[in-house]
Amino acid sequence: MFWPMAQVVLAFCGVAVLGVLAVRVGVEVRRFSRAVGDSAERISRAADELERSAGPLAARGGGVRRGHGPHDGEQ
Image 1 (cartoon, rainbow, N blue to C red):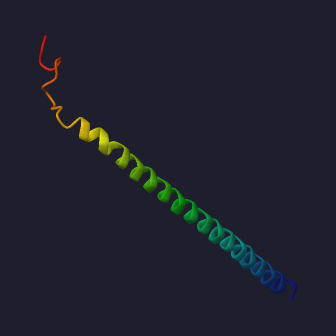
Image 2 (spheres, rainbow, N blue to C red; image 1 turned 60 degrees about the vertical axis):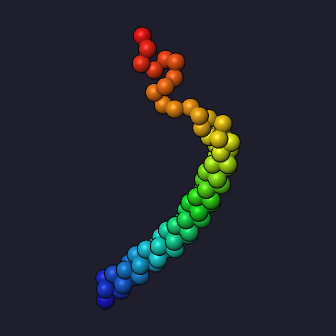
């Protein structure tokens, strides 16, 4: 009778350990997803800022064409 009870206790402990680990994984996944969301928001803001900054530069450089510079094709 001792061995079956020991097996039941060990099985319960194993399930309890797996439950604790599952909760920890869930907490870490939530933390990771929050960090990914924050990073995506920062990247989006940086891309918007870069686009706004590049606008005036592109407007000033609109007359420049590729292949028609002083060093292109000349030897």
